[in-house]
Image (cartoon, rainbow, N blue to C red; front, side, top):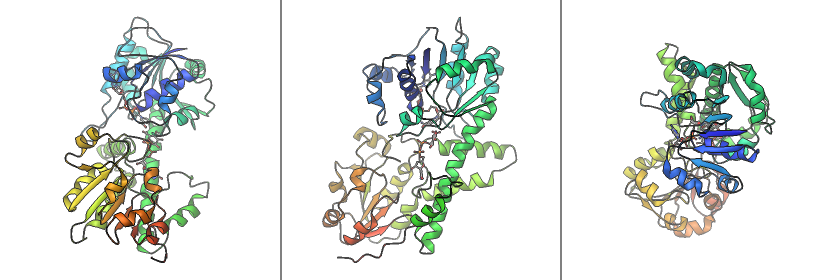
Length: 424
Ligand SMILES: NC(=O)C1=CN([C@@H]2O[C@H](COP(=O)(O)OP(=O)(O)OC[C@H]3O[C@@H](n4cnc5c(N)ncnc54)[C@H](O)[C@@H]3O)[C@@H](O)[C@H]2O)C=CC1
Ligand SMILES: O=C(O)[C@H]1O[C@H](OP(=O)(O)OP(=O)(O)OC[C@H]2O[C@@H](n3ccc(=O)[nH]c3=O)[C@H](O)[C@@H]2O)[C@H](O)[C@@H](O)[C@@H]1O
């Protein structure tokens, strides 16, 4: 098939590459000319492991606009949160308006962007010709493993009014063997929101349990292992840490809770999920708050996860200014973010080139991102560079605490009981 993908971010570019790998001819459209210029040179404009290598193996026609008739158009443009927690769907509407008003509209118009429940109905009210061609097919990939998730999805959710479109969808996704959930667009929209709300809930739950464990001297790692082996619990998304800090979970929960409040049916659970998360993102502050004299702080990692440079909702955005206000001295190290990005997000911050430069003289080390350079640290070497007895805050329970303690450093994780290790 000949397919146009509009919006070449994490979702759209992954879809374009995945569909090209499946043998389709793909035209990739983005209104950002700088992005197109890079893509034409087979350079991806963000950090997504494996995607650039895959892009180099396929031929995609990248442009800022097209008038060419294709069999299907996939819309994957941004739908950010507006102030007041409503979602901005204007770019989706704009693209649909352009596509539907073209002389011969394509047979399939697929919206992959996350849109609030009811948006597809609104789109069809605005563009009645859309109804017979329309599918809302939400995307469930995770950044950092986007292409792998595309190639082997858990499910394909297909929200449509016109069942006659299904053979075309099968042709489009001929090599994706996941179960299909065929429903109406409104339900498909809600599958996406309910999924992200549940993931957010799981993380806040894990963090609450970790907090309880900490108070009662119980090791949360073993508790989670014991609980999550029950298949009813689902094995993933159990890791306590800094809370969710990606660009979507918070955004999707915010939309649901805002709309619930508006309709007079407050979602008590999800309101609490957000509250727990907001508190959790700042937990390193509670550990450094009373340290006197003001600490010399090294922050290792600014990304919310090593596989994605998406800083739209990263916990470090709130944490760093608070730390800067508390610390006598603050240094950050991050191997992915460029100096320009760091200065734009955290003006004036002292960004150093390597971990050793960051930890030298530190009285507090905060490990925020699970980069291999952090998880693989030799703590005896760190102890020689850092101040004696330096506090190591493991914000993701990713470090070997025995190694940290046996090097003479003080360890604090999330709901972990400090290991009984003989100090040197
Ligand atoms: N990032 C993720 O992990 C996931 C995101 N989603 C949803 O998918 C949608 C896209 O997300 P991302 O890829 O993260 O966004 P993004 O912000 O990385 O990329 C969106 C792209 O669309 C382009 N764009 C915006 N308006 C346009 C227009 N009118 N014409 C052409 N190009 C346009 C932008 O220049 C940008 O390159 C959002 O609705 C998001 O909520 C869904 C699942 C996973
Ligand atoms: O709608 C979306 O945009 C996507 O949001 C998340 O994907 P992603 O944003 O890439 O983020 P994840 O890697 O899944 O992590 C989300 C956040 O939760 C945190 N997390 C994750 C797992 C865990 O056990 N504990 C935990 O704190 C991560 O550090 C991160 O801040 C979902 O996992 C995807 O299914 C969904 O498609």
